Every structure is written in structure tokens, then in C-alpha cells.
Image 1 (cartoon, rainbow, N blue to C red):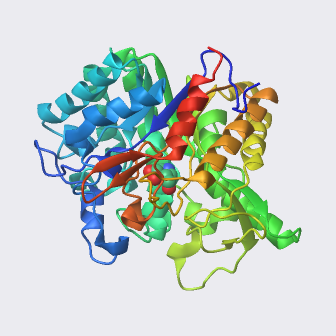
Image 2: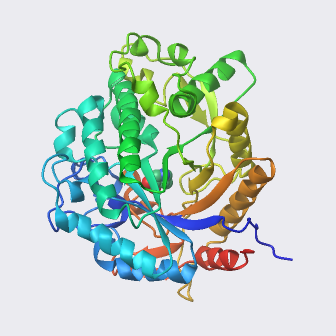
Image 3: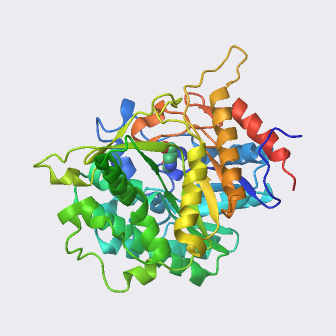
Length: 459
Ligand code: IFM
């Protein structure tokens, strides 16, 4: 008997990364600046003043990284395309050298027997588009569809799985409300307009991908499993607001063709008269998908918190009107995130219960943990906590499948240690350690565990 979680034949076991977090080469071969170049180069915004300028130097070292994936035995690799590498100004001339890079990467993967899965937007918006309003304005959604058509036209014959957006919650709320992500804005209504335009961009991109005839089209959202801090009516109401802002804002339009019924109690006057919503938008957003990508890391314990008068921007900030409190007794990762694997099962079962037949097959497109890794005297990284995290979450995923949720695959986050956004290089999510001084790659124990688990699968 195997100790590994086992999945049906055909189940995809993969690994994921994202462009700005690993590529580096930000000024090479015609790439234009993105909002993350601007943000990370603004003093004080990213820990340690870290930037993605070099990152894992994947732009030059991708053959080595694909070799690591091949040795790992994954069936699929999820990576993102950097919009400003392909269309440096966000609109206008296409940069052939940028497209070539992804084309070479795709060919390398296919030669290694690995299916590429492409994310079109993992947060590196061309700065030129932010200068014209960014996701606050509809034009960005339209430009996104044009860029999508270019990439799909170039790679669509070789890439079977396409993801329009990654975690639009982070783009809209961390980017335009909390200011912890690029472009670092602290607005109220601007964040809600951004959320809507991201959804419109998704809808337009789905159309472009269908026209290009690609095989599978989906979107990736980070869903939260919100638990009330206490049973008090105030905390229960806070959970409804948190659920609306994190989950329903995406799942209701994407899967049910409606906006959340609880949006007024969540956003108050910020959502009054939402003139950024136009007739026909919901139809565009609700187009059938081949899969839903879900990213999941941890549950969130939510408590009621007062609204700070005089600071309207914070009405939609996640640290206001409700707040996250620590879960007693749970192990916490280096991100200070509680580890409760069973909440992944609960989240997926709840999703299935709410949307029924309207829920397409699910891929868990990210899951993993940042740990305070150390290199041992033997030169290895014995990351036992990460191994336990992965094993327990994969088992929880299997339980969701046993409970009737149609899950088709799992992608570990991440193949490599990388640039963890506002945390810089101070948080390590990789199953392969990256020594940033030498760019040496050292597979951790979790890499060897995942490899053995993949090898133990039935088919
Ligand atoms: O590193 C990120 C990734 O870019 C998006 N999902 C969450 C990961 C860990 O924070």
C-alpha cells in the first residue's frame, strides 16, 4: 500500500510559476516596463528593496528549469506570459523577441513531454496602460483581449490549457485599495471598478481564445475559506462581507450571471450607481468555461472591525470593517498563514453545493507553503513541514473528489523559490531552492517527495 494520496488516471500533477517572480531580464530583448517594475523600484514598498530585475534568471536558464520539471515527472507546467514582453506599451507594436522566448519555452516543455498551461495575466500590467488609468478603466480590458489574441495566435496550436487571469482579487484589492501590490493605489471605488474591468477583460479574452480555437479555457481565482472568530452576530456579518469581497465578487458573475446580493452591505455607497457596469457585461463574463482554476493556501478567521471614519478608501480594504485574527493552536507557515488542510475540502464542497452543474471541472492551480528553509550540513534542504503541508493538502483534495467535486489536477506553488511580491525574496515557496547569489538550484526534500508521489500514481 502506498502512503501517497492517489488520484485517478489522467489526473494532472503539475508545478506553477509566474513571469515577474522568476524571469528577470526586465530590460532585455525589448520588454517594456510593467507596474511591478515601477512598484518594486519605489523605495520602501518591497521588503529589502528587492526587485524582479534578476529574480531566478529564468529568462536565460529556462532549459535547466525545464530539465528540473522533467526529472520531477510533472504532467504539466503552469507559467505566465509577461504582457510587456509581448506588447511593450500595452497596445501597438508586438515585440517578436518576447513572443520567441515563450515559443522556445513551450517547445522545450513539449520536447520534455510536459503540457504547457499558460496564464495570460499574472499581474505585470504594462506601465503605459496604468498611466492611462490601469484596471480602473475599460480600455485596459480591451487591450488585454488584443494581447490575448496575439499570444493565442502564436502559441495556441501548442498550448492546450489557457488561464485568462490569476487571482484578480489581488490585482483589484491589493493593487487599488490596500496598496500592498502594484500599482499601490489606496482607493475605494477605483478598486471596485478594477474588479469589474478585470472580469470584463476575462470575458473578452475568453472570446479571443475561443476564436483562436484553443482546447481548454479557464480563469484562476484565489478563494478564501472564511471562518467566524466567534458566533456573535457581528462576526457572522463580517464573514458575509469577507465572503462577498473575496469570493462572491468573482464566483457570482463568473458562474451564476449575477452580482453578489450582499454587495450593498459590503461596500455601501461605494457600489451605489456603478456606472462602470454596462449592459451586456454579465453575458460576457458568464461565458461557459472548460475549467475553474482555484488557488488555495489557508483559512481566514474573520472578526468584525469598525469602519474608520474619514478614510473612505479603506471601506474596501481587507483590514477594515473586518479583520483577520490568529487561529489558536494551528501551525503557521513563514507567511504566518495557519495550516488547516481540511478547509480545502470544505471550500470545494461548498463551491459545488452553491453552484451545482454551473461549476466547471476544477484545477487547483496553486497550493504550497513558504517555510524558513535552511541548507543542512549535507547541502540538502530537509523541509519536512512543506512535505507535510503538500501531503495533507493533496489528501484533502482527494477527499473533496470523493465527496463529488470534479477536480482534474493540482499544481504545486512553486517550482522555484522566487520574488514573493511585497515580501521580496524573504519568503521561499519553492520545492527547489534558489541560491540568488549563484543562481544554483537545489531540489529540496519536498521536490523528492513530490517526485515519488507522482511516480506512485496509478496511470
Ligand atoms: O506567490 C504568490 C503567487 O504569485 C500568487 N498566489 C499566491 C502565491 C503565494 O503568495
